[in-house]
Length: 194
Ligand code: ITT
Image 1 (cartoon, rainbow, N blue to C red):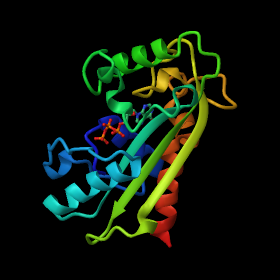
Image 2 (spheres, protein in one colour):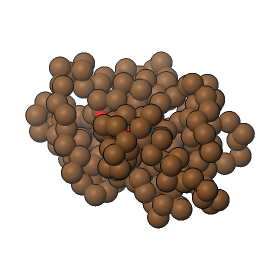
Image 3 (cartoon, rainbow, N blue to C red):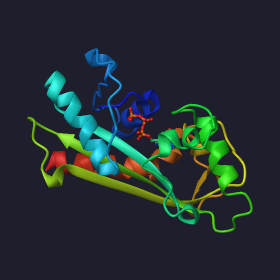
Image 4 (cartoon, rainbow, N blue to C red):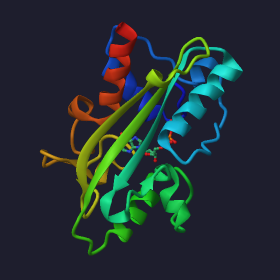
């Protein structure tokens, strides 16, 4: 899995279960900060997977994830990882700064509907065909304050529809049953089995 995010790797391993061994970038001694210069999730997922194939020659998949908030016209979207830093809150990849920025933007905003979207790009033998992209979406809303200690990133402020808990209040098992990442990964596994 072409990710530098250890929590994504842990989730991927849990979603796939014991029948699989998922290697991360550290396992192939890759410590590159892979540039994510595309303006789409799909483009960035492909960039990450392509980078690993080109330099290390191994089959891999990469996940790019965005949080889309309706009242913010789809922001942070492709800028989800560095949202806070764009508005002067902390540095890139700082989850607390990202959450503070998001909650500040949504202060007094009533429509708090949002979704997590994950796009996974799979490269096998150097090939990425159009059918090697897998998307997972989970609809929900942004809470007025962070709740819960599990998960990572924006989990404390994302409450999926149909639940009274945020992702960070759920255990890993519950999040992995319904999450954007789990949906995209199951689609990839179905494709690989076929
Ligand atoms: P890689 O690019 O190395 O995979 P990353 O953390 O930078 O790691 P993304 O580019 O996909 O991953 O950035 C997505 C942002 O969304 C980042 O801030 C994550 O913390 C956050 N994020 C991703 N998946 C999430 C999830 O399941 N729950 C909460 N936040 C998530």
